Length: 107
Image (tube, rainbow, N blue to C red; front, side):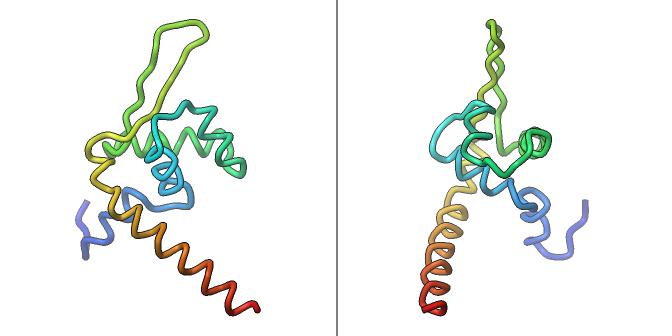
């Protein structure tokens, strides 16, 4: 897909409400689908599955399926996903500043 500016490529991969949140949770370690769902109670199961599939297709997330009963699926960041870590850290730092700024404005 041709992009007019590089940030469009970034947003193509991480765009939407949930993808960055998923990446932040996986930054803390591998997670099962149920663990991700528990840590994001406002996301529907359908949306979580869709976002994980898209992140997997873009090479950001790896899905590992274990042949056992009951079936076990674990998601983790790929090396390509880990390359996004500095951006996640910057987004978290900015978010903390934004929260503090809003608290000052509301007082």
